[in-house]
Length: 137
Figure 1 (cartoon, rainbow, N blue to C red):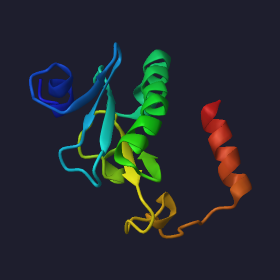
Figure 2 (cartoon, rainbow, N blue to C red; figure 1 turned 90 degrees about the vertical axis):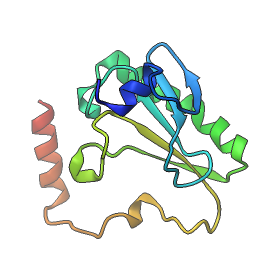
Figure 3 (cartoon, rainbow, N blue to C red; figure 1 turned 90 degrees about the horizontal axis):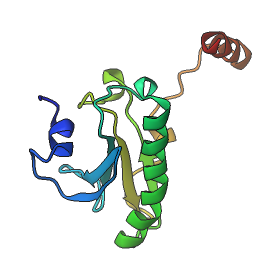
Figure 4 (tube, helix red, strand yellow; figure 1 turned 120 degrees about the vertical axis):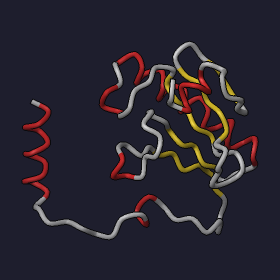
């Protein structure tokens, strides 16, 4: 087993686990962006969000919902940024789905998700909406 997250889930690598559930494990990031930076991972090795089965997706995002408040409260944070890097082009460095819960404070120096991207819009909204609806089927 080469995936570091799979090895953490299996208990082969020590981690500061905050919860173990039947389909999900959550632990502190060893390279945190802030105190309390939690990673929530499915137990099953799945590389991208769209590869999750319905039950896996449900368990993962229900765990995120359950953890967001307690993470914020435990750290005395004002809020949390919750995000997923989905694929190598997005900065996903470990090819195992994981959701970041990062506690946030006023004036912490980090921006919103909108500050990550330069505006790079080339197509009309209606054209993009039509393309997505077509891909959905």
